[in-house]
Image (cartoon, rainbow, N blue to C red; front, side):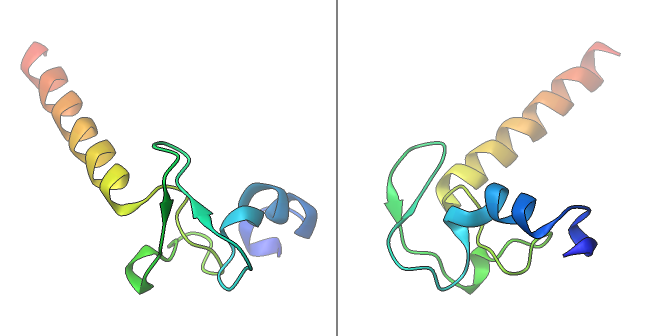
Amino acid sequence: MRETGGTVEEYNRKYGNHLIGKDGEYKCVKCKKVWVPTDADINRKAMLTYYKCCGVCRLYLYNREVERKAKLEKVN
């Protein structure tokens, strides 16, 4: 697990609830809804896990960040 920059225990602490193939439900950390992940929801940094947020929340957060950056560019 050295490719993630930590130990196995640290990896499990950070991503344990979102491991691919775990028993139980996947719960979004933002909206707290239970969601069913697909292949598009696999985390690109930690390839053995799904993202912590559902697709709707990830899209919302992405768009909010784009708007924030555009606002900052207008000010400068």
